Length: 309
Image (cartoon, rainbow, N blue to C red; front, side, top):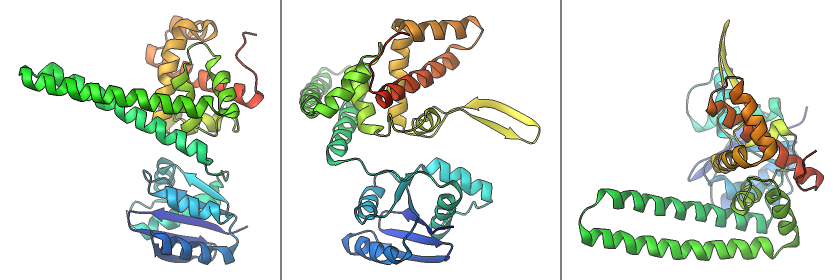
């Protein structure tokens, strides 16, 4: 059967549950606590250690687990929440969460995935920072529309100018990291060979979806939050929806899909067929985004640039 470990990460501590031994313990989320965590887990020789993604708190924990040579899976909180609801566990306490994560690992057995290497992690942080700066610029421009006082408009202009200068520097650093590595350069060129996919989209996918090209189309769609699921209860069946996954990746793919749906001959024809068949435009866009991601996944998997069959 194997041994499965669930770790629930909070700001100050880690709650741990081990199955089938049914052993639970907690350690502090600091250097000493992480060292204790690894030492206590090693004797179990776990088949899998599952850590719930919690907005960045899980990174050092995941690094400690993976660095100790233990099989690691960082799991989507939405999956854990849905699994907990299926088990009938609705109480929100850390020990219960750790047990649910361990049971999820034992039942679902998500594939262990290595942490991104140092360069991938750096690129992910740069791309994330770029997104934050772009959002700040957009926010300042929205404020400018609502302000009439000249002095405040000048203040906003100065802030925007500073942010735009920082954006240029971030873009330059991203470019240096991508173009300076033959492996990254090759991957970026492969992704950008698809009409509708620009360099920024390619770099976002490389940084924030490192599994691209290594998983099947259903799993990669799930990671991007583009896998459809249907709300169903008894004989009632609702509409298929998408959700979960990595929001930044989904946003990047949607932007690329909007461009590809207009200018990529294959995806434009696909979109037009759906619209002609009476599908709402948003449904057609989601379908194009999912198909585009499948194409990009296959391109990296096969190491072959875009070509029309």
